[in-house]
Amino acid sequence: MATQLEILAEKLRKEVISKNSYNSSNGYSSVNKNALSDGDERGKGDVNGQVGSSIDIQNRIDNLGRNRYNNGNEYSSVNKDALSDGDERGKGDVNGQVGSLTDIKTRTDVVARNKFNESKGYPDF
Image 1 (tube, rainbow, N blue to C red):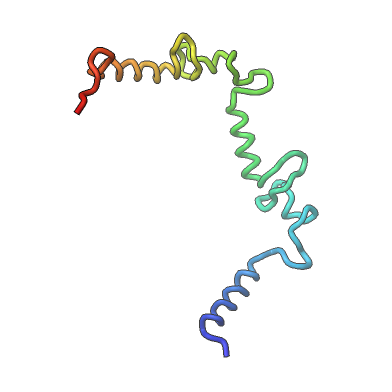
Image 2: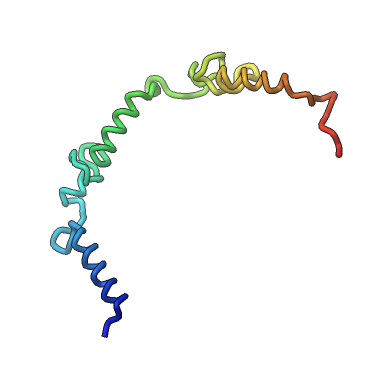
């Protein structure tokens, strides 16, 4: 005789299985409509280079549209926006200055307020 826990587990298993739209006659595969990324929310496969659900694809298009870097303007050590030359974009090293303009100003301010330096070190307790 089945215990109440076994009965509850079997009931829960049947409930979960009933929610699954895939079964032996409708398997999840590369030919299943819901496995393909064709503009709906279910598909995550590849159709015409579009991988992901419709929301994934729209987010990617939006993110790429805001990204200023591409094949003609790559982010590299020679790109002006990669160098720390006094603007907010650059984080690279120019004349020992690493970081954006805000980073450099903050570092200068913090170092100026620090009472310990090469001639006055931290106390040796």
